[in-house]
Length: 231
Image (tube, rainbow, N blue to C red; front, side):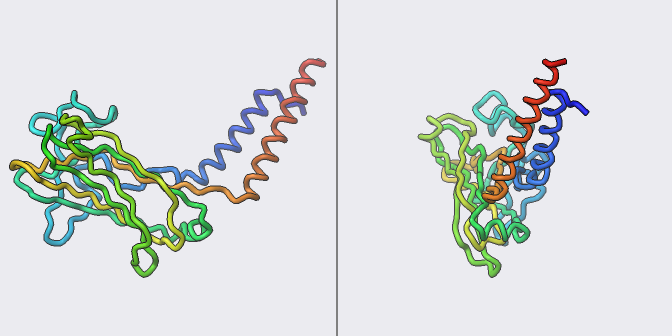
């Protein structure tokens, strides 16, 4: 049976897609409701500390026309009216990823949009902790704060990001979002579109298999073209 170049390419794409589907769990946002579109669902409050609020883009906070993510949706997180300090957290179980993490093959990427009001120093901060099975902190990462100088004294949200390797021994991670009021009555720490993902680097043997498969696809494609030309 002869295969056309298009059929070979389609088969190769399906094979690559199948591999990607198996690794898709690594390439997804692991923060629940990081965009405030479900209110504050997914976030837990610390004892004795109020949880931040989810509000509509609009008057008194950030206008839809002011700086922020292009896909900002309807809501954002804010510290809230009359709240000096607000915070919430999420916990992420990474126990099932322990083998790859302990092999030093798992990286992370965190991003979000943080900001504040005009020249006021109210701010938002995302603090990420990587912990071992006993709950000991192995390493930390941070997003923000975005200062008035960073914002050029402009109201709005601005993109921040960080990345690195998940420390060997990590079995869980925590994401803490906090807002601090330093001026006026409202807590104008702002946050939206928070994201955290992990990526697994394939083992050397996997690379060899992938390269071998691509070489075979190229060979079949050349044969298909030659068969077509001969016909």
